[in-house]
Length: 398
Image (cartoon, rainbow, N blue to C red; front, top):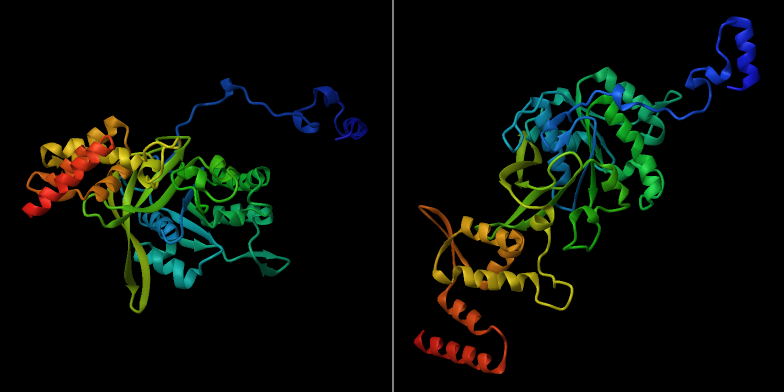
């Protein structure tokens, strides 16, 4: 407000209004400050403990084909029925809202929700926005205020899914400043509504072996603005060698940033004649997202042995005394600083046998392979001849 306008208002309507310099902060441009003494510390409010926080933005990323949308819908379904999360904890029942720019609500999203057990009366979908009497595509740059009003009318929204989250960015999704500016309304919406917001995105091509958080496509602002980043990927099964999928925490500013859960994608028929995919949760897994999801077959960067070579040497020594419990292998690998994903790949390369007995799973390695591996270190002409001789002798015996 200009000084002349303020003084005119003061003289006409209220002769006791304070001078402009003493007027409340909203009367002139200023910086709004809050003293710590006026704040009451509040705990983080969780929808799913350490995974989905109320009033916060989250990112779920992964390569194509990993079922990211199906994972998000499984979480949404859990919220609609007040079901149990993969860790066994109970979710408070409520409504969910989905904004999808890729999948149709009627033939894809709702069937998947129903396959996961969702209550359809608690599922809502953003179809568009109404402007000047016409329905037009939803535009986050213009319609988040109206969306907030809609959420207030529905009431009880626990989770908002944005698929893909890049659709909330009207500018260049690779520019840090533009992404931060575009995501801030979503952050504000989450805070105002008290719901968890989950944005879905992809991994960039390449980058295997790096921190999965750094592989989120687009600007680093997507991961920076989100309070929790989850990643999904296919990995080698621990015991049977079959491929499995893992949902892991890659980053968290408000809780643990490691650990995860195995999951499988299954087809079901929630309604006669309607096929849909759903998630079947598996066991909890330990380790960082990089350990759980990365491709370990990479050199250490200075021309030395690869991580898998080091793990092969570790397994050769550990299993030389005979069958060893899987738990012992895991503990020794952790102590040695070798990721479990690397150990699994090394075990495949060595032909490690994995068998289940009454006491659990055990790992073992054929004696011939142990002898060959031991003779082959270090690699010089004399020891190469020893390896060849040993192989020849064993071949004659066989």
